[in-house]
Image (cartoon, rainbow, N blue to C red; front, side, top):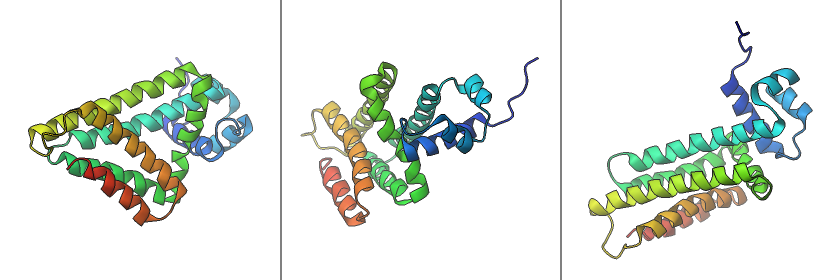
Length: 194
């Protein structure tokens, strides 16, 4: 009978998100990981594999959780426009909280790995497609509900735009603490749905 793990694997992934978000993949040493995670070297290897494996698991955990929240909002009954507004607003709100913002920086480090890591690149492509599909389905529902006017004929392109706007807002929120500036971006982006 195998020995029970002496640590919570989800807690460790959350801690890994913090340290990789703070230092980036390249600058995070094995010692940094072990100290921040509070686990032994052998436990790290036995449970997660290499530093890169742990990084990828942490990135997937972070993105899967964030994407699930976006998809949940897009699928909820009611106004699709209001759901999209909330998605944009939530992205800004996270980055206004210094503790929650730290974790978000793991994405920067993951994007840097894309040219060198085919598995990470394919994962990002899959997750982008997943969100574009969710936005597209929500826009179809909005059109059927009468929220979108007839001039909105290319809903797939609009879905791609909205997903990229969500990402751009996150980037903009990292660059400026000016909430008025960020609200302007949301307002102009949402005006495309009129």
